[in-house]
Amino acid sequence: MTTLTEFKESLNLEQPVSGLSAQLKSLWYDGKGDWHQAHALVDHLTDRESAWVHAYLHRKEGDIPNADYWYSKARQSRPNLPLKEEWEQLVIHFL
Image (cartoon, rainbow, N blue to C red):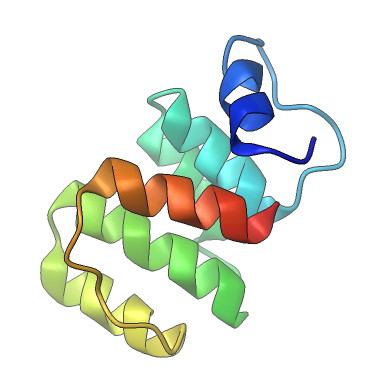
């Protein structure tokens, strides 16, 4: 899987395709509407990439102070764009 379109098409599957990183699996579950599973996949990880996804998830949840904490851990700024666009940018980045 190498494109955003392919990733979005995979959301029709019951399970994520094998070989996805933890970050992409998290974004896949979020794309399926399962915020809790998405969060569980990155909640315990401490690397910057996972922190970035974690930040997005808390922004989506509406917990902006927590999101800002994780954006800082990821060395990213909270974007001023719709959540859907941030999700797509994250998927493209991690693909």
